[in-house]
Length: 180
Image 1 (tube, rainbow, N blue to C red):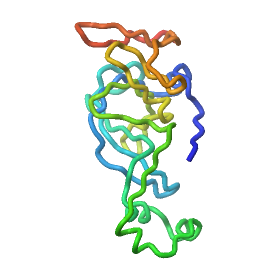
Image 2: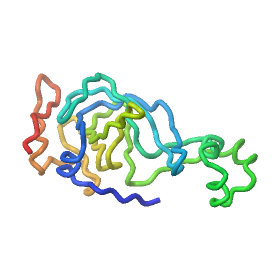
Image 3: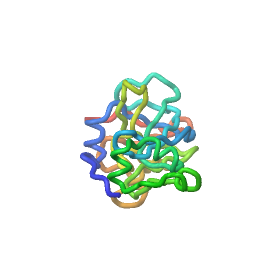
Image 4: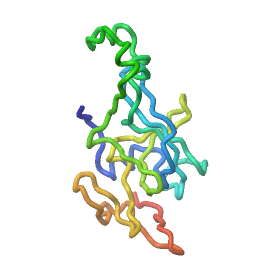
């Protein structure tokens, strides 16, 4: 599965996201299936270390990002009969009992417990959750020395956008307010 993201550059993501936070990812809570488009997503939690843009007053925030693993029963229960028929699914008993489904591509956010990230988010009021705004492009790991992971380059790099210049403050990384 290939996803097309409207924004992939940090400057564009910063402009279009609200909020933008520097956070430590704590853990996955659950994987869910959207019952309209049958996309598997993971719901987890992150500890806010610094708010770089927007309003985010919580210390721990719920975060939603595309990808994850669910049982076939969970996946099938999100599908209506038309979707099952369209997918060619007729017999579900075997699938419901023995299989799991995983949605994973290179473009998806891969958040790991204990690691720190720049998260470009969108607040989804109806679900009271923050959604990662653009796959791996909107969830960029920050190394201990302040380099930011670039999915385009496949490596940790020094930010060359001028938006995020990392400083050490008492042994902790800190992002001065970005210059727009």
